[in-house]
Image (cartoon, rainbow, N blue to C red; front, side, top):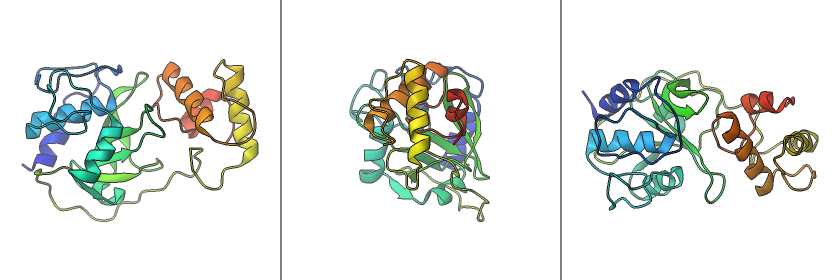
Length: 233
């Protein structure tokens, strides 16, 4: 069994457990939640590989050091192997990473089953569950240093997100951004000026709204967040 397969199998053993933004002891093999997305993935790495990865200090105490998608971003650039996200999606145990939209904000990270599915700590409304790769926004695929993986499978039918409002996303409509900003303000999450610009203030307001609703906290408005905001993209 490859390390990628071991990681996926261990992740599957935690399906149904709770999501809370906590620090997980990476060296506790009997931990059964709660989890957040980065803590879940860094715990899996320690359990399979015996080393810290994606943590704010990879030389720290595995029982207390914090994992973070921003640290996964930097580690994947310096210590791991970035691969195209479609390649990671077709690799058992491949990892998909969405970078944090700004300092202190959250991205998202999942482990892939090689067939277009994921296992992930998705959010407080979902817990640890299976998800899908397709139709979501991924910045990179990641393969871990010193891990063994099987060959990537054949090309999967994976779609880019068709409707997504996010920092730096092209072809966004100013009218829709204003709808997002107005909805946030009416719900008590101030996005700054209602100006049709998807900027840092809007990202922060979206992320705060997502956190209260148990959604993936990434500061991006896709179909799920739009539905909760009661707007049309």
